Image (cartoon, rainbow, N blue to C red; front, side, top):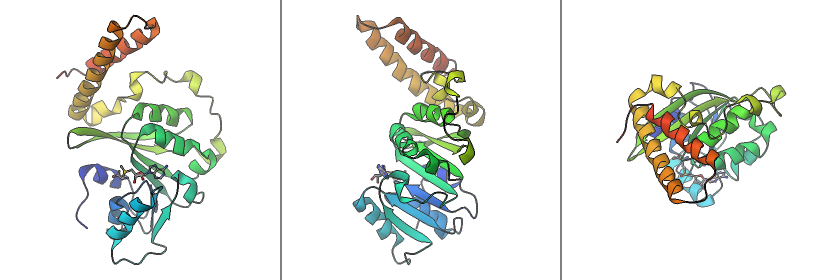
Length: 241
Ligand SMILES: C[S@@+](CC[C@H](N)C(=O)[O-])C[C@H]1O[C@@H](n2cnc3c(N)ncnc32)[C@H](O)[C@@H]1O
């Protein structure tokens, strides 16, 4: 197959030589096939809730023999994996809330895998908050341009199985609407130009929300303050369009 898009390549770069992986919501299967064909992952599991989507991955695999190294599974989220079956799990191209729900469905199984790479299409802040509240360590946040969009890629390590359960962290964390969950500071040092541009996109969204609030007669003070705080934060990145 041809090379990957920049977005999928960024995800592929998070998989280390020799790591087995499962791709949840694989659709066309490009990422796992690339990892397997290039000898990075000795075995890959392509998973999708939709049979027609999985059929695309099978078609992309073409003449390759399906078997232990190239496995195709239809089903919902992590339900079709056995605990600890792969080193790394990728969940890309879905909404952040759906990713969160997939992870929360069976937390014991979720923490049995070594590493996750997420590429939420939206609601990345909610996903980050959930991850940290549940003891995950976010080790990298990255941005990548795809067409007219800027996409987010999050690499995270789950807590050790013995540590799961109520981590008691929620009390000490910034609130879920804190903009630090939208634009974590490491992005500013690692990808300052794209982070500034992304901050400007977020700033535009919040300004529209604020305009709507000003038109409405029924907005709580705390909601208004929250949006104003988010605007200040995104503006502090110093880039407006
Ligand atoms: C937009 S595609 C993303 C394809 C690929 N991962 C990418 O990032 O380019 C989303 C895929 O997720 C699948 N999907 C949605 N909900 C799912 C779930 N709960 N479990 C597994 N797959 C799911 C859809 O059928 C679809 O094929």
